[in-house]
Image (tube, rainbow over all chains, first blue to last red; front, side):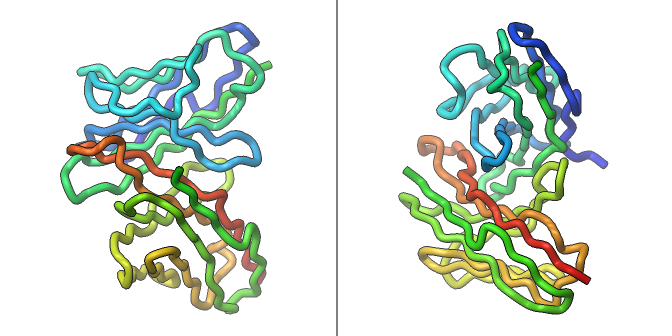
Length: 115
Length: 115
Protein backbone atom coordinates (compact mmCIF):
# COMPACT_ATOMS: atom_id res chain seq x y z
CA UNK A 1 0.00 0.00 0.00
CA UNK A 2 1.68 3.21 -1.16
CA UNK A 3 -0.50 5.49 0.95
CA UNK A 4 0.56 8.50 2.99
CA UNK A 5 2.78 7.44 5.86
CA UNK A 6 3.21 9.27 9.13
CA UNK A 7 5.42 8.52 12.08
CA UNK A 8 5.38 8.24 14.90
CA UNK A 9 1.73 7.35 15.34
CA UNK A 10 1.79 8.38 18.98
CA UNK A 11 4.19 10.83 20.58
CA UNK A 12 4.40 11.87 24.22
CA UNK A 13 6.43 14.94 25.13
CA UNK A 14 6.88 16.89 28.34
CA UNK A 15 6.28 20.61 28.34
CA UNK A 16 9.28 22.42 26.90
CA UNK A 17 10.52 19.52 24.77
CA UNK A 18 10.58 19.41 20.98
CA UNK A 19 8.27 17.32 18.82
CA UNK A 20 9.16 16.18 15.30
CA UNK A 21 6.45 14.69 13.14
CA UNK A 22 7.28 13.01 9.84
CA UNK A 23 5.23 12.52 6.71
CA UNK A 24 6.03 10.59 3.54
CA UNK A 25 3.57 11.48 0.76
CA UNK A 26 1.81 8.99 -1.45
CA UNK A 27 3.94 7.69 -4.31
CA UNK A 28 3.89 10.14 -7.20
CA UNK A 29 2.65 13.05 -5.08
CA UNK A 30 4.70 16.21 -4.78
CA UNK A 31 2.44 18.39 -2.61
CA UNK A 32 2.12 18.03 1.16
CA UNK A 33 -0.32 19.62 3.59
CA UNK A 34 -0.40 19.55 7.39
CA UNK A 35 -3.63 19.81 9.37
CA UNK A 36 -4.31 19.81 13.10
CA UNK A 37 -7.36 18.34 14.82
CA UNK A 38 -7.83 19.53 18.38
CA UNK A 39 -10.14 17.60 20.71
CA UNK A 40 -13.78 18.41 19.90
CA UNK A 41 -12.73 20.62 16.99
CA UNK A 42 -12.57 20.18 13.25
CA UNK A 43 -9.55 19.80 11.02
CA UNK A 44 -7.64 23.05 10.62
CA UNK A 45 -5.14 23.78 7.87
CA UNK A 46 -1.62 24.60 8.99
CA UNK A 47 0.79 24.62 6.07
CA UNK A 48 1.13 23.64 2.41
CA UNK A 49 4.49 22.66 0.94
CA UNK A 50 6.03 21.54 -2.30
CA UNK A 51 9.54 20.16 -2.54
CA UNK A 52 11.89 22.68 -0.90
CA UNK A 53 9.19 25.39 -0.86
CA UNK A 54 6.58 26.60 1.59
CA UNK A 55 3.59 27.69 -0.49
CA UNK A 56 1.11 28.72 2.21
CA UNK A 57 1.75 28.83 5.96
CA UNK A 58 -1.23 30.97 6.85
CA UNK A 59 -2.49 28.42 9.38
CA UNK A 60 0.76 27.98 11.27
CA UNK A 61 1.12 29.55 14.71
CA UNK A 62 3.67 32.36 14.48
CA UNK A 63 6.00 30.93 17.08
CA UNK A 64 7.45 27.50 17.86
CA UNK A 65 6.06 25.78 14.74
CA UNK A 66 7.97 25.16 11.53
CA UNK A 67 7.68 22.83 8.56
CA UNK A 68 9.90 21.66 5.76
CA UNK A 69 9.76 19.34 2.78
CA UNK A 70 13.35 18.74 1.63
CA UNK A 71 14.42 17.56 -1.78
CA UNK A 72 15.10 14.14 -0.31
CA UNK A 73 13.24 12.55 2.56
CA UNK A 74 9.94 13.12 4.33
CA UNK A 75 8.21 16.34 5.26
CA UNK A 76 8.83 17.38 8.87
CA UNK A 77 6.55 19.37 11.17
CA UNK A 78 8.56 20.64 14.10
CA UNK A 79 7.12 22.02 17.31
CA UNK A 80 9.59 23.58 19.70
CA UNK A 81 9.01 24.03 23.44
CA UNK A 82 5.69 22.20 23.39
CA UNK A 83 2.85 23.28 25.66
CA UNK A 84 -0.25 21.38 26.78
CA UNK A 85 -2.35 23.20 24.20
CA UNK A 86 -0.33 21.54 21.43
CA UNK A 87 -1.87 18.17 22.33
CA UNK A 88 -3.82 17.16 19.23
CA UNK A 89 -3.88 14.85 16.26
CA UNK A 90 -1.69 16.08 13.43
CA UNK A 91 -2.55 14.85 9.96
CA UNK A 92 -0.52 15.03 6.81
CA UNK A 93 -2.12 14.91 3.37
CA UNK A 94 -0.64 14.75 -0.09
CA UNK A 95 -1.85 15.54 -3.57
CA UNK A 96 -0.60 14.84 -7.05
CA UNK A 97 0.27 18.37 -8.10
CA UNK A 98 -1.07 17.97 -11.62
CA UNK A 99 -3.59 20.51 -12.89
CA UNK A 100 -7.08 19.05 -12.60
CA UNK A 101 -6.19 16.57 -9.88
CA UNK A 102 -6.84 18.21 -6.51
CA UNK A 103 -7.81 15.38 -4.20
CA UNK A 104 -5.85 15.25 -0.97
CA UNK A 105 -5.16 11.88 0.62
CA UNK A 106 -4.57 11.73 4.34
CA UNK A 107 -2.23 9.72 6.48
CA UNK A 108 -3.21 8.00 9.74
CA UNK A 109 -2.07 10.93 11.85
CA UNK A 110 0.29 11.48 14.75
CA UNK A 111 -1.34 11.86 18.13
CA UNK A 112 0.74 14.23 20.24
CA UNK A 113 0.25 14.27 23.98
CA UNK A 114 2.03 16.92 26.04
CA UNK A 115 2.34 16.12 29.73
CA UNK B 1 -13.46 34.22 5.14
CA UNK B 2 -14.43 30.81 3.81
CA UNK B 3 -17.01 29.01 5.95
CA UNK B 4 -18.32 25.47 5.87
CA UNK B 5 -21.25 24.37 8.03
CA UNK B 6 -22.41 20.80 8.32
CA UNK B 7 -25.74 19.59 9.66
CA UNK B 8 -26.88 17.78 11.60
CA UNK B 9 -24.02 17.45 14.08
CA UNK B 10 -25.10 13.88 14.78
CA UNK B 11 -27.49 11.51 13.05
CA UNK B 12 -28.75 8.18 14.31
CA UNK B 13 -30.37 5.84 11.79
CA UNK B 14 -31.73 2.35 11.77
CA UNK B 15 -30.19 -0.02 9.28
CA UNK B 16 -31.92 0.50 5.94
CA UNK B 17 -33.25 3.97 6.85
CA UNK B 18 -32.08 6.35 4.11
CA UNK B 19 -31.19 9.96 4.91
CA UNK B 20 -29.06 12.94 3.85
CA UNK B 21 -26.25 14.99 5.36
CA UNK B 22 -25.93 18.66 4.50
CA UNK B 23 -22.90 20.84 3.88
CA UNK B 24 -23.46 24.55 3.24
CA UNK B 25 -20.59 26.82 2.28
CA UNK B 26 -19.69 30.46 1.86
CA UNK B 27 -16.58 30.92 -0.25
CA UNK B 28 -15.19 33.40 -2.73
CA UNK B 29 -15.11 31.15 -5.76
CA UNK B 30 -15.55 27.41 -5.19
CA UNK B 31 -12.73 25.36 -6.66
CA UNK B 32 -13.86 21.97 -5.45
CA UNK B 33 -15.96 20.46 -2.68
CA UNK B 34 -14.71 17.28 -1.05
CA UNK B 35 -16.36 14.62 1.09
CA UNK B 36 -14.35 12.45 3.46
CA UNK B 37 -15.16 9.71 5.91
CA UNK B 38 -13.27 9.50 9.20
CA UNK B 39 -13.33 6.53 11.54
CA UNK B 40 -12.26 6.99 15.21
CA UNK B 41 -8.50 7.16 15.58
CA UNK B 42 -7.87 7.23 11.83
CA UNK B 43 -7.19 9.76 9.13
CA UNK B 44 -9.89 11.04 6.78
CA UNK B 45 -10.64 8.75 3.86
CA UNK B 46 -11.39 10.44 0.54
CA UNK B 47 -14.87 9.79 -0.90
CA UNK B 48 -15.83 12.35 -3.57
CA UNK B 49 -14.87 15.58 -5.30
CA UNK B 50 -17.49 17.86 -6.87
CA UNK B 51 -16.61 20.93 -8.92
CA UNK B 52 -19.74 22.47 -10.37
CA UNK B 53 -23.42 22.93 -9.51
CA UNK B 54 -25.50 20.02 -10.74
CA UNK B 55 -22.67 17.54 -10.51
CA UNK B 56 -23.35 14.18 -8.83
CA UNK B 57 -21.05 11.32 -7.82
CA UNK B 58 -21.98 7.87 -6.50
CA UNK B 59 -20.16 5.12 -4.65
CA UNK B 60 -21.99 2.10 -3.28
CA UNK B 61 -24.69 3.42 -0.91
CA UNK B 62 -23.41 7.02 -1.05
CA UNK B 63 -24.34 9.76 -3.48
CA UNK B 64 -23.01 13.32 -3.35
CA UNK B 65 -24.67 16.27 -5.03
CA UNK B 66 -23.73 19.93 -5.37
CA UNK B 67 -25.65 23.20 -5.74
CA UNK B 68 -24.31 26.75 -5.73
CA UNK B 69 -24.58 27.02 -1.96
CA UNK B 70 -24.60 23.51 -0.54
CA UNK B 71 -23.83 19.85 -1.01
CA UNK B 72 -25.71 16.80 0.13
CA UNK B 73 -24.43 13.35 0.95
CA UNK B 74 -27.29 10.92 0.47
CA UNK B 75 -27.04 7.54 2.18
CA UNK B 76 -29.32 4.86 0.80
CA UNK B 77 -30.20 1.84 2.93
CA UNK B 78 -27.26 2.35 5.31
CA UNK B 79 -25.52 -0.46 7.13
CA UNK B 80 -23.82 -0.40 10.55
CA UNK B 81 -20.42 -0.28 8.80
CA UNK B 82 -21.38 3.12 7.39
CA UNK B 83 -21.13 4.53 10.93
CA UNK B 84 -18.41 7.20 10.93
CA UNK B 85 -17.88 10.94 10.93
CA UNK B 86 -18.47 12.46 7.51
CA UNK B 87 -16.48 15.56 6.70
CA UNK B 88 -17.10 18.16 4.04
CA UNK B 89 -14.34 20.49 2.83
CA UNK B 90 -13.93 23.23 0.24
CA UNK B 91 -10.80 23.96 -1.71
CA UNK B 92 -9.49 27.47 -1.37
CA UNK B 93 -6.89 28.94 -3.67
CA UNK B 94 -3.62 29.58 -1.88
CA UNK B 95 -2.91 32.62 -3.91
CA UNK B 96 -3.53 32.04 -7.55
CA UNK B 97 -1.24 30.72 -10.21
CA UNK B 98 -0.74 27.00 -10.22
CA UNK B 99 -0.97 26.50 -6.48
CA UNK B 100 -3.54 23.94 -5.46
CA UNK B 101 -4.65 25.28 -2.16
CA UNK B 102 -5.71 24.29 1.30
CA UNK B 103 -8.96 22.64 2.33
CA UNK B 104 -11.35 24.31 4.76
CA UNK B 105 -13.31 21.70 6.70
CA UNK B 106 -16.69 21.68 8.36
CA UNK B 107 -17.15 20.28 11.85
CA UNK B 108 -18.48 16.97 10.52
CA UNK B 109 -21.60 14.88 10.99
CA UNK B 110 -21.33 11.85 13.26
CA UNK B 111 -23.42 9.10 11.71
CA UNK B 112 -24.47 6.08 13.75
CA UNK B 113 -26.35 3.26 12.06
CA UNK B 114 -28.01 0.76 14.37
CA UNK B 115 -28.65 -2.84 13.28
